[in-house]
Length: 469
Image 1 (cartoon, rainbow, N blue to C red):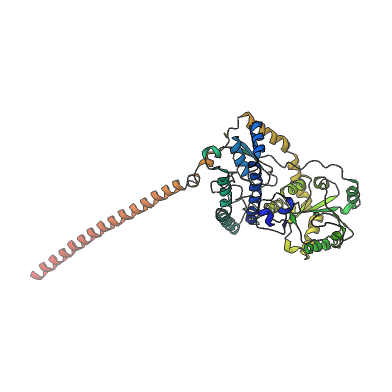
Image 2 (cartoon, rainbow, N blue to C red; image 1 turned 135 degrees about the horizontal axis):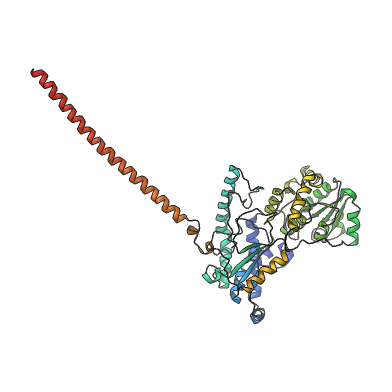
């Protein structure tokens, strides 16, 4: 990430990422950007005065940034956490207090794949569970060393103690845009509502040039390629991908950013096949909903993931960073995606993976099943979000849905003190049994010695009588 971003720049061009990046590095890079935005608001006396004059009853915010907690504290209002990504653990809920990640959802590591494991099933083998547990411990350790200090420093800077009893009850609910049709399943607390994806919707007509390209594909259809707005591809990667696209039977509609293809010369340098069209903008939801779209080569951001799933389009997943690898794992686990790795680009594995997702019926069948589940929600995600926000307002922002574990120390929450007491009782009982056994053996031994001595004395007396006779 560019140096300007690390200093808190809000310019989108300063936050672009080239190539894949580790999750913890992403968080370390992005928190200063978010804190910089918070500082801009809080330091603007006019804006803060207007906000207080508005007299808000509730704040709707996203807790990846400390600003949600800080703003709610400064305005003295409760807030609803609007969670803009799927539940990724162990990131969603940190075991460390004051770390600003407070989903407080159970994280059953026996069947819930952890971040960066690459596990695409909830039915794990023994080896996978070992790896899953080790990843859980490693992540929390690195979190404590690298991430929590940054967040704690931000709270201290703004004069807010997130661990104070009043502050812990400001977040009254979390609205998550995930859906059980895709997300890994687990028990959820009453204050975490999975409302479903906000952005997917029925497709609208495409602009004339795109419609002509789509319809001209015939029965072979179109592969949509889009990598979001943050991650970018290097020139050699783009050229290798273009060569692979030229081998496909389908047409390819490829969205690249203006930084990647600033002019026609940059597009020409890609050496595109006759089946490929490059654009710098397209209505992604509407293209995915077009009947000629056969598959989607995507970085697997949460919006693209759910738009493809909503429209029943299989995915070739090429994740870069953050939650994208886990989104890819979930899509693979649900059967409607194939995983593509960056090192596959430029090899035969890359076009072969694309051909699989374009032609194998199992991917399309699985994507249709997921689509049916997403579309069968009794209320739309927007309606459900509005329902819960209105409910919070109607109940005065009371955090009555919070489970007690959110206020319990780590040792108490996991009953470690209870188990320690049980272990203590067992140890005392075993030790007492040992002492009693040893005492019994000693007494038995003493009695045995005494009996032996008496018996020996009797033998001696008998022998003496025989000799006298």
